[in-house]
Image (cartoon, rainbow, N blue to C red):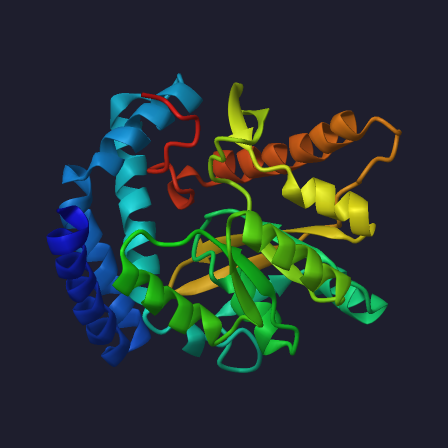
Length: 292
């Protein structure tokens, strides 16, 4: 019943909001998204999930601090939603750039090396900038993404992201084969690694095991290619900071499982550091630990 009646209605509403925000000036669209989610976010299931996650991750947080963080979370997510309608127009180079890029040489070195590399990030700030910035520098990524459950929304995602990605690969077995083919061809691949994967490896995150995808470590080991972290931070005035970090150390001890775990420990440690620094900018509404 949901697929027959609810999904088309939800899809139609999102389409209307998308084109409405696309017609607005970017700052207005961002502000509209913020006000919308600040209004409805507290009534959504994600609010309860995020509050539970925050209380467990930050046991010393007071209720007032959790309330304030939740307002920041809904503000960030709402702004990201409003901005997403015209994310392909956001400039990351030149006098009109809204993105401050830090340590760009790590990205440039990987491009100049001529081989494949993997850029990974998490759902921080306006995370789409991790793909928009490389595209505007002439190196669009082959992006791995989670298929949206609402068909109309998934079509919209593919249309927008397809405008700045070389290829979009849905998660799954068929997608895994395509990722391998892309890396074999020397293409750079982009991945978001901060969401739960039920078949993943249990890796600590905020002191609790979280099922984590191991494909990035396995691929980096297989192709001996750089695994480059990228952090996106939201700044005032619909501006962002994109920080490129030094490629992770990928060990080769002969114990494949231990080496994979060592890499993914580095990944989750980075994400935890970023989330502790600016908790209002991470996707706490996601059930990262699989709690019931």
